[in-house]
Image 1: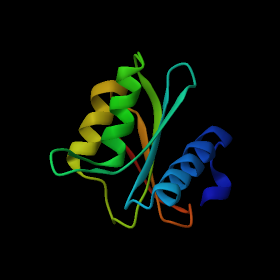
Image 2: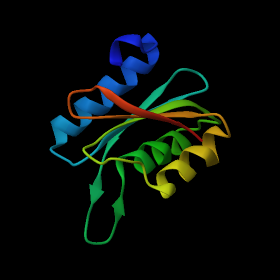
Image 3: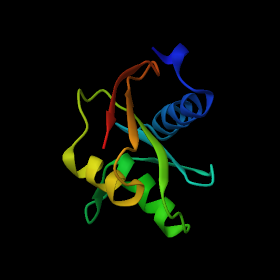
Image 4: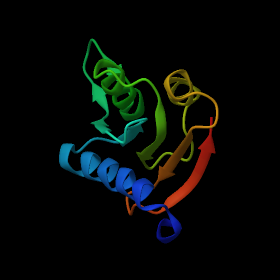
Length: 114
């Protein structure tokens, strides 16, 4: 399914996959804001702070001044995205923002439009 992706969506899946592999974390995520800038993150798992990769990427976008999101991607072995992750994307991106879920091989398994 990855072959049929828009090049910009393929890019955020690749960035999410790279973050996951580089940091050795369970999930990697990337989001693209309204200007085309991308924000990439991995899972945060500290004793005092636990965030999914997607919520971390959304937080990075907000902290950098993003006003909206065009799309998001997560690379994970999980079969589905959590409601908390989808809510974070919806909060910044609004209704209609696509979230791609891909496996470690970067093949997109599902797309959820929040």
